[in-house]
Length: 113
Length: 393
Image 1 (cartoon, one colour):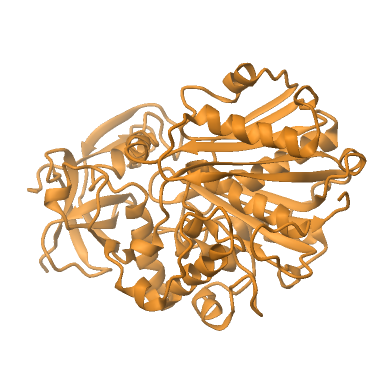
Image 2 (image 1 turned 180 degrees about the vertical axis):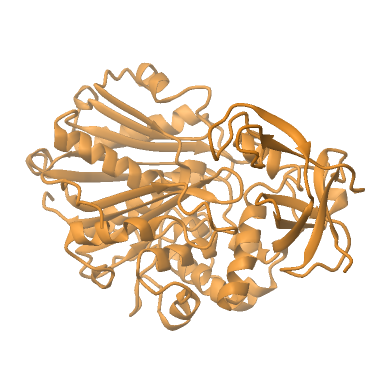
């Protein structure tokens, strides 16, 4: 789960980012959307330790730490937590990484202050 | 407050049908729809050709739709609707059908929900539940709805001080009610020790917080009071109904649903308040959502639902507020969108004095609520109706 460059869909008309990806901007309904580098800084809103999966591929990797993170750019994401200790309200940095099964996924690392 | 909508005068809801659920169905979803429809015809004495309105809710009917069912069952309705609102679909089906009958667009509307979700079917449904879920939720462990509701539940617990015991009180009361309900798949009473000792699923959710996927069908008819009386069918009147979609997108983690936006309209149209309800059929995919509804529908104040469930007897034969008097989905299992109809059929039975399990005494007026469709990280649809004893029987 290594964090790399992080792009989010942005509206070229109103410059707002959004998530999950859309072809139409939810703020201004503009239809010109581009994936652009985003500031991955954010705050943990809530967390869960996942012990059960519908997919046999995930089962060997359980438990998994997952969270809802509010990015500073106003975008809400569900992410993996990379590491053990994450407090609600704590600062994190989001990057594009991989799920344990190799899919692209957003991964949060704790921000060192 | 918004202008009050016109009422549903002269409209009856009748003939609640439950096709007993099973964990693993040997039949396809059309069979479940067909069994429900056949029971409506048999129990009402209303012929199939007299049904001129049809409204359906199902996840597993795809690629077929309500349109497909007209040909499958040989119906020729003049009013047709296919609801994608899952757990909110029951009260929404009733208020839409009631409006059609009140307006004269249909005479007899069959409201049907069916789904086949045992075994691998549940995982297959979740893989393609919505585009946002596919892109933004399922890559994070493929946990289905357990993950979004675990995130919502932990946030709610931290915000309100709700404990696992508070959540457990809801599950235990429902299982008490379900023990008397003939169609409950889970009939064994649940103790607090068992609840607390259950294995974790997606913390803070444990096994008994989660509904069991299964197959089933629920149905009812909507028609004029005149027709219900002439057929001697016990019926309910619809005092008020509301729905709301994508309420409060500004909540970073969902804490309320949409009921509070329309609650004043609901109660004012009914001329009643939350304290007048003899029972509450709430959508119970997870106990935190019951708490949302207790608060959103004004049964208690925002943030007070943990205290409310600590201090209130929620059993159907207790002294407090009878909650999910037939046992709810936590006892019966969740047959997909059918869970959205479960409170409706149970509410109709209660106000007509025809409970299959525990009958609430003096159940003249009751509240039925729905919630559903976790498109990304929260359920987007909220609904509620107030039912009152009609005549008929």
